[in-house]
View (cartoon, each protein chain N blue to C red):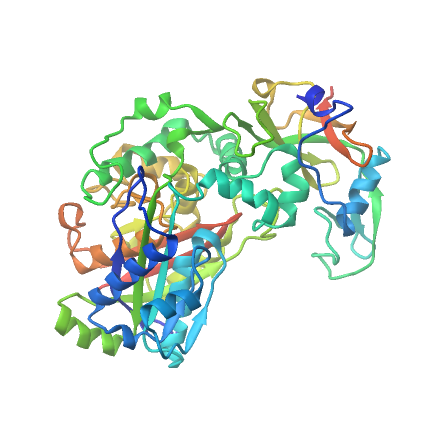
Length: 142
Length: 394
């Protein structure tokens, strides 16, 4: 699935809108650096990006580097696409929980949908799908 | 007792016929107008008595509805934007309006051409553009092809299967019960099409662990209710013969964070988890008092999850609760006695409120729950917004 998605020309799948904190998050990923916001005050990690720490209300935070290691939290295998661009089925939309706590929606690049398991250890890989956007995907790790 | 306890009644209900092919042949607005006219007629009120309107989340504006219905003195119009949780939450807003005297008689219509118009799959595509689910879905889920409700909720269903060994047959029992009830309902789209567990297990994957028969229907139709004060309900009852149905307790709840289903501290804690205890406290009744429950059934697992979060059983014990026909008519807690969104029609849950009202009026015919006095109705919307009403007959 990543082969299709990563074709150098004509990447046709929907892309995030790069604006505000979303642009910042994806910009780190474009540099092959997975980071999340961490509150300067209470040190709570958070995702998706928020202006204020939901834990303590602090507006002070920094983009902190993630280990990139995590485990599969859940997934769904999509046989009947509900989007015109995602016709290469089946594919698995996977939620990975990083060691730091945040969970991300992603794809697992080296396992088919039938070879996934909850709690399976995975690590980040970077897929430069367009000159502007890199997506954080994951692969199995020992 | 809570100041809003029993302070408003459902006095009128109305529905259009429900259908799939070839479709209703009329607009969403027309469907909602016909359901509204039926509900007002059922209540014994005149159209000119309607002075409050809970405007639908799509399909028509409040202005259009009021203009067509000749509502000349609209004093209160508001919208509750909670997807499929909107109808039950709108009961709460209508109750507040009636109790405070802001409006006397509040009409709540909803409906759509969910089959012949923009079907669910189109809504999901539109969601990718207009993003009613919010920027989180668009910017963080959609790039990975996760953009629609069966996909979002499957993530919860799989996690539940992992943590509690929930089986496919458990979800199948919910689909089978709905279909069984639909056989007793003349307006159910799936009447005459019974369903076995094997049919369920043989149905194709949509978004695993959801099969086709885990999913609700795409249908055309509308439904509406009218909410009024208890005193007016009693005088109308003398005219119409319909028992007043009391809104004894009602509450809405929102999951945290509402816009991101993946980063919740506990993925099973949803809006209903917060709403249910509030509604029961207001009603002075608990889930054990319910004679039946109409549970928003966009997908089978959401019924299981809501039975747990609404306190009918503990979290993780839903499988034991739905086993052996316990949620079928004649069982411990009949659920979705009309067939629900899965076998009657997808009317965004308003058909659940209509059915609960008919049950409590003892007007449900062949599917009547004997001597029903307390009914629970839930709503579920967006990424887990929830609402619950405890309705009673005195």
